[in-house]
Length: 238
Image (cartoon, rainbow, N blue to C red; front, side, top):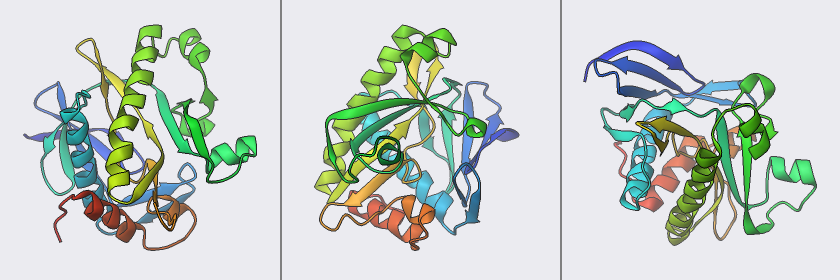
């Protein structure tokens, strides 16, 4: 597949056109950022680790009946994906209270959330991804009511698949965000699922094994990503 012109450059990924208008090349860079781009750094191996991590998770979800944009790995840092018309909202699931939820609501860090909490956020870095609800989405026509219902259903279904997968590997899937898009009239899971967009804790020690290590200057960021990958059985080249 021949890579064409750059279509979009995000904080950690670059997306390229291809000769086929229905598919894109997603390149995972070594760039790492936090706090809406205020803190930025390059971390060796990050692009490759996230590329392989995402491929593993997307294939697991596909096996469980979740339709995604992922097609196949192309190289160490590139994947082929379907070109989606992305919906500009983030779907967030929280199994454990931490981070912004605790700051907003004053709840105890580490509190197990029963039932699991779901939140919508507008995908807009300049506005710092403000929290929104179904009414905002309907009023501003970011998605239809049926699409909203599908995104909620799929996000919770992902939780039922991934929570036990991580737990069996000695880890807690604390929270995560998903993004969806339209493809041939259907809603598909897009973007990525990597330690950049979720929180993962060791089940015994509660050690953070995700991007919070970068946010909080805990060190060993990519080493922790690779620990998660190894526990899940993801093979990443040396």
